[in-house]
Length: 267
Ligand SMILES: [Zn+2]
Image 1: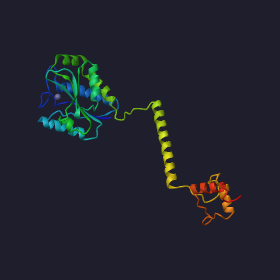
Image 2: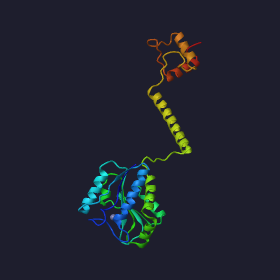
Image 3: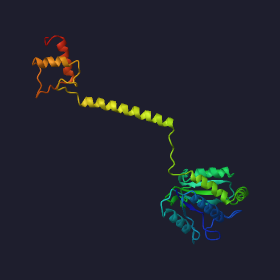
Image 4: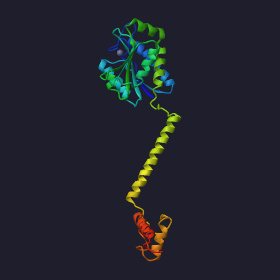
């Protein structure tokens, strides 16, 4: 997979460098982000670093992040952040609140490490969500200013978090497809066989309707029950085809046979 990773804001201490509480957002997004990039590369993914360290304004920073992400085709874009404001747990922000770019799987991974799962939020208006081409997720790992979150994060360490995120994103292969079980395959095959049999029958009927069988000769094509009667009519000179072709249809065969059995054509 081709994955774009953005380590949140600019570096610590510069314009727009993110939240600072017990943890420093700018430092921790880099600790988690660069560890995640290494782990994703080790698993054979192509990783594009979409981090912008220095910009003179927040809008310049956001614009540069998206430019880096959109410079090549990506399967997904992930922007790593840490939350502030005294809440608890991890949340993922996506366009329309959809579970894209591994959002749901990453939240599950963080939950299994002990963080509260705050869910996937509809944050369609976020700059990096709206202006990136690839399916995008902005992940808030946890709160920098909540004792429980900061304590748990420090206990686990950035690498452990990166490992969990890598695991979550690796399950997000775009080529991932569900294989059919043998039973499902058999059921599907039977359904298709039945369908094609019905279609064949239908087209046979249609064919007969638009092309009624014409018997020009007394041969194997002509039904056996009609052959003696037609032979008799030809032998006696009652029946002569145009250009040696009889041009009889089923209805005519039946009529001649009934008349013959009624004795109309003699012995
Ligand atoms: Zn942030």
